[in-house]
Every structure is written in structure tokens, then in C-alpha cells.
Length: 172
Length: 458
Image: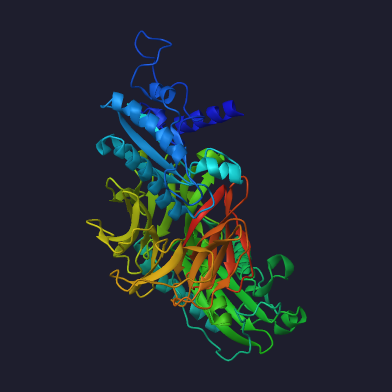
């Protein structure tokens, strides 16, 4: 099932970038984890099988998670989320030229417009925490997808908990 | 019969100037006034207890069978009668005897109905008409409403249309009949923009689409490469304001229906969303999120610098003007949960109006000014409801897992909204009458969300 999802999303990403074929698909929603296409471009020069330090792959391998979660209707960064963001801040401090974008997402049990605002709050909560941990805010952009891009597909508490999230994406 | 001929000749003559301009949205030409004001026939829009008025709508004959760009005039006569029948039946106020259930009518009968025969079919009202191809390529559709019991004519109008807009003549005919029988404003000759959806739940492909109020003349406006949300009609119906994630930059665009071009209206480093035109079309209300704080702004519909209208630290969004433009209804969670607030158009005098328990969202002011429609969340349900602008008389119309985003019909009697299915999340468009009756799914080629019902066409 996970494989099917990846394929579908890769297909969707290709569709979405059909008008600008050179655009890298990894900046498209939904966030990483199950969604990162495996073919994110040519392999690094002469380093097949290795991960380039400072790359999105390096980030995802180095941090506890690229995703933090939020309670229902909340946007405060809880202790578990702080621990995750700490590992992100640590990695970002090693690569001061790397820029990131943070996506804010919501579950489906809110209205469309409000959820765009709530997703923005969540992305900014993560941004503010990283900034407090020494990551320059000028390196961080935010975007809210509201309830438009869930990762869990059910209409149940467990799915909604997964979908209330902020995802850090390394740009390159 | 002599009167009839004179009328139709006058119609053909009057039609010529309007079509010489070849304007797509040129006004239809209503001809002749309503007649016979005395009638006991009345459909009460607030009474859906089942005393439906029976209206017979036989196929409309043609004085001379002719082939047009829209098809043969005799075939059109039947199709138009079917559309009039469907419009009226969908209100939930009428039982219609459609062309398939009625005998045919000769051209000579159109203005001289066989009342005895219709009375024998228990018809209380009768709609007759005709379709004629004019020498200049246009069509004239005559539309007559009769009170069968009183044997009197209530409405006599003619509409001149291009073949491409033949369905509009049917909607105009249904509109004059509806207005005459209910005393309410017309609404059938109108269009809807919405978001057509397809694809898996975690990667929905969303396109702007436009269609007639009854689902006909459906057309996609965008290709689905970017997420698009919340399209809203301009009052002059020439354009649509909406939000798009084009280039991963959430921004507000205006789509021009005439040219098919889109222009950026608001774009900056912040998240901009929830746009809606003012009733005079000069302004667009929208929401801007800056550093996690969302407020309501307005910007000239020509573009320029936005003006901030709210300053609370909460999420303020979903602004909608009162029909006179003097007030704005919006939602805010400044008090802890989403509630509905009203303010003056300049942002002053902000006050909460929803106090019914639960969360309230997506308020929209009725074009009549008397009600505000909203989404209410609570108890595991998303429901559509209405309340007065002062917050009283709350009335919930639907009860569902996922109803959201009401939009008013041009006459303020009907609401469109979208209903999402639990699990799949797939949405469909629905309509409901203000009485909470006549709930109806609107047919769309794909799934549908975020409907915006446009004004009555001129």
C-alpha cells in the first residue's frame, strides 16, 4: 500500500509539473516520509549510493523526523515536537547556507479557509521554535496547505492526529 | 391569433440591435408585460407541507419547423419545456406535468389554451409557449402562464436569444413563472463556479469550473496543475476571484471569463486566501496570514495596497459584505473558538453575533440582506444554517458529517453547499431551500466543492 501511494504521488507530482518540466518535484505537497519520490533528479556526481552532506536526503537521515504533530485545534509545540525540532536545528546549524520551508497542515475536521490560517499558525510555530534555537528566520519560509494535503487517508482520530502537522523541507 | 402575430413581429424587430453587437452576455430581451394580475394561484415558499401546485408544461410548438444552430425548432420546443419543468420541479414547490406526460399543443392553441382539457388533468397552472427561428439567426421563445381555474392569462413574455444561449430562454421563462407564482425574485438564469475535484485524497486535483445553475454548459477553467480554492463570482459576472497555489505561492487571482486570462490580485510573502468581491465590485475582501496571525483585509479589485480591517491576534477570515456594502460578516477564533462577527465596512464596531454553542464558520450574507448563512460544527457534524444579521433566529437546515461552504441563490431563497463523504472525503455539490426542504444533489462530471452561485444574468 505504501508503495502504491508513493507511485500515485510521484505521478501526481509529474502531472503537476508538466508545464515546467525542469522543476524539481520534491517541493510539492504532501510532505516527505511516504511522499518523497525516489527519483529526485540525477544522482550526485560520481557518488552513486552516497548522500551529499547538506542535502534533503542528508537532512531526513540525520533528524529524528521532518514532521511534528499538533493536538486538535492547537498549534503549540509540545515536548515531543521540541525534541524533533532540536535535531532539525542541530542539523541546520551545520549547514548555515541551507534554506528550508515549513509546511503547515490540518485535519479534515475544520472548514477550508480556517484551516489555511491554522496551518499557517502551525508552520510559524515550528519556525519560531527553530529561530529560538538559533536558526536564522531569513532561512525559513512557511506555507500552509490547510486540509488540502493529508498524509493519512482515514476519517478517524488516528488519521487526523497524523494530518495535524508541520513538515520541514530542505530546499536546494 | 391576430394579436399573437403582431406580438411576434414586434419581438423580431426589437431583437435586431441587441444581436448586432454580438456580446456573449447580452441581455435577453423580455418583451411585453405581465398580464392578468388577478389570480388565486400562489405558491408559498415557506410552506412545504405537500400542497404542491400542479403545473402542466406541454412541449412548445413552432410556427414553422426550421433548422437552427441549436437544432430543429420543434425539438427545441420540447427541450425548453423540459427545462422549465425541471427548474420549477426542483424548487420543491410544484408538481409538474412535463412534455412526456401531456398531450401536444398546436401553435394556434398557444395563446388560446384548452382550459377544460387541462382542468381535466388536474392542472392548476399551465405554461405554454412557442419557438421560432428568426431571419437574423436568433430564436424567439414565447412564454405564457395561465390560471386554469380562472381561465386567465397571468404572464406573457418573449425572449430573443442566440442559438448558443437557447437554454437561457427556458430559464428566463421558468423565472417569470416562479416570480409570478411565489412573489419571490427569480434565480434560474444564473451560473455557478466551483472547484471540480478528482484523484486520491492525499493528492486531490482541483480545477475551477463553471456551469449553469442546473449543471448544463459545464466547462473547466483551469487545468488542475495547481491547487485552486474558493472561487467567487464578481457581481458583474465578468470575472471570478479565487485562491491558487500556483508556483507554490498561495496567492489571490482574478480570472476573466471573457478572455480566459488570469491576473494576480494579491501576492506577497504572506499567505493570502478567502477572497470575495464587494457587492459593487470595487473591492475584494481577503485574509492574509502574517507570522501566524490571520486578519481580514480589503484591496481594490484593480489591485494595489491592501487595507487591514481586523487586528485581533486570532484567525479572522471568511469576510462577506452585506448587500448594501455597509457591513462585513466574518469569522474569528479571538474568543477561543470559531464564531461569527459583524463589523462596519471600515473595520469598526466589531461584535460577535453567534452564541448557539459549537463552532461557526464561513458566514455569507444573503443578497436580500435578511439572513447570514454559515457552517456550524459540533457533535461530530458539519451543518448548514442561517441566522439573522443580529444573531437571532438561528435555524439549522442540514445535518451531516461534512456539509460546508454555503452560497446563496440570487434571490436569497436557496443555498448551494458541498457535502464531503466520511472516509473518502469526496465532496459533492448540494442545494437546499431555506425551509430545509428540497435537498438536491447537483450533477457534476467530477466531484465538486466550494460552490459560488453567481447573480441573476441580465
